[in-house]
Image (cartoon, rainbow, N blue to C red; front, side):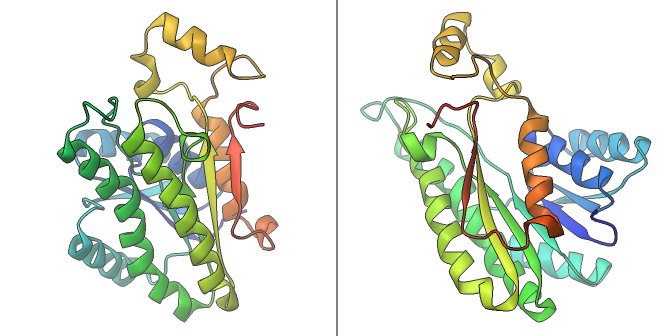
Amino acid sequence: MLENKVALVTGASRGIGREIARTLAKEGAMVIINYNGSEARALEAKELIEKEGGKASIYQCNVSDFDACEKMVKDLVKEFGHIDILVNNAGITRDNLIMRMKEEDFDAVLNINLKGTFNTIRHLSRQMLKQKSGKIINISSVSGIMGNAGQANYSASKAGVIGLTKTMARELASRGITVNAVAPGFVDTEMTQVLSDDVKKAACAQIPLGRFGQPSDIANMVAYLASDKADYITGQVISVDGGMNI
């Protein structure tokens, strides 16, 4: 389905990002695993994809760094000739009630989650405009739609991603480039595994399907939006949350 396509997935060394990279590779794409911190994790993800018969490469870049993102895009276009799919998945949390939230924690989350998404789109959109094609999928969150106590920074960043998605969809549509967002709910990853049983139970009570999602649930939606089957879908925010945001 994605043969001869090149996909850049940010924050792809673990969790949802890794599963997205795996799924796109299974569909035939050449996947670039962007990571910031752990090269070892990125190499593990690459090896896993290759064991499954896929193709992958790794690239270190802090997406909150505007100039570093520009270099990443130039390097990748030089190496592969084109980039057809961009998945903005890189994200962090620094949860706290707003009365206790440190300014640096607010800034750090906005810089990675929102500005990082802007940075990659800003630099890659020029290439996609030349190609007159491209698929951009931004990972938002149910928190960006509903809000979530203790996550003022995270919710604001993910709400910003939604606004950016809709605006970019309007700006890029004339060249055949689609821009959509996926908004996960609670997903069983390292980020949620640290939650206490009481918190998990309370969270499940808010989900009509009564359980957390799996990374594959998000990855499958991303793969669909990256495919030709979604050519007439743009500017949309698709919740994959077990009905939490009904």
